[in-house]
Image (tube, rainbow, N blue to C red):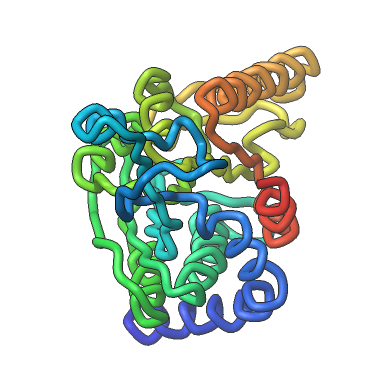
Amino acid sequence: MEIRDIIKKVKQIEIRTRKKTEATLMGQYHSAFKGQGMTFSEVRPYQFGDEIRRIDWNKTARFREPFVKVMEEERELTMMLLIDISASMDYGTHLQLKREFVAEIAASVGFSAAGNNDKVGLILFADKVYKVIPPQKGRKHILAILSNILTAEYVPAEARTDVVLQYMMSVFKKKSLVFMFSDFEDEYDQKILRVAARKHQLLGMRIYDNKDNEIPDVGYALFQDAETGQQMWVNTSSARWRYEFAEKQKQKVKGVEEDFENASAGFMNINTGDDYAKLLYQYFRKR
């Protein structure tokens, strides 16, 4: 993709998402996440009505009278976009490729964050971390992030969501709002998922195409795994084979949803033809 094509595509995404962001998402984003984090401000003497759990026991013991910690809301958030660039994400049979759909959703949440004066960062990953853009503020920064998403070289490797979460936790210590985009087709370490969800506000976003869940009857066909390169012939005319494939996919998605739920993390299942703004709006309202 040439530079002028990239600029054109980024501008198109900005225009397409601007109305959704301003009219639908920005207000809900603000109310859902602003002020949820708390930072230490000062210590003062205990007053009637203060919460017991706010007592500073060290200072209370030293001065032999109760003191409490005063906390204040964090007015500035950091949003991290973790995006799977394994080959299975560079695919689509509906209106657009998964990668283009991800870029559009990333634009919506990114511009929502920018509109609330929050920082946004990007990590592109597959079997390892391939690119990191540190969190910054502003519209131009979001446009640069979109350009990187659209021009990323998608790699034939398994997506290790646990590897990118572990990396993020080691580099970005401050509690962040984390959007992780993937089709979650590959295995991961559930323990790391749980640890990440405790340290950050984590939302897993499974981006899928219709053909990820169900295979149509096209007779004998040669299938190739986009990530491993493994090939095999399949008789898609077999109703039993199609049924078993669909059931296997359902169970896999159900397992991922349960893993995120058990980790106290959010999870969304979004088809490339869905109205993602509506789904995000509903998710933000629930928070």
